[in-house]
Amino acid sequence: MAKKSKPKSKAQPNPQADWYAAFGEPTRLALIGVLATGAQTVTKLAREIETEMVNVSHHLKIMRDADLVITERDGRFVIYQLMGATVKGTTLELAHTSGAKVALPLE
Image (cartoon, rainbow, N blue to C red; front, side, top):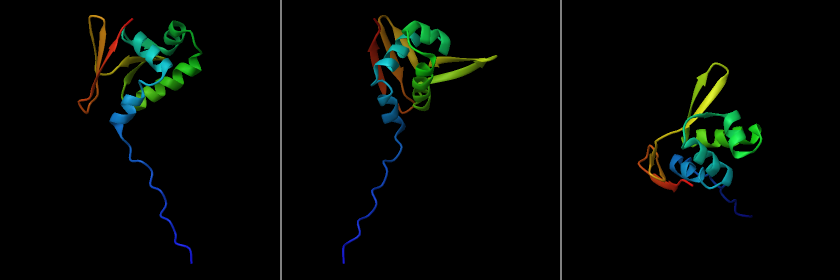
């Protein structure tokens, strides 16, 4: 009789890993660069990085789920801004609720 194998367990959610992963994509890095200048709507972000609004919305959802951005509703608009962000000279410093920090150069 063949031995049954245990089903593989799914990886446990790791908010800190998700936060780090949110930096690892060029569109999201571009969005971070624009958001470093201040809060923006999806429309303004799409115009600034020259891509479709649906693409920006997709990446913002990933960033929001990773606690990288927060939102505020203004009528029918949603305003996005970086969470735990500080600009120091030409460097953007981001801090996660776990205490993890990342410094990104602003160009």
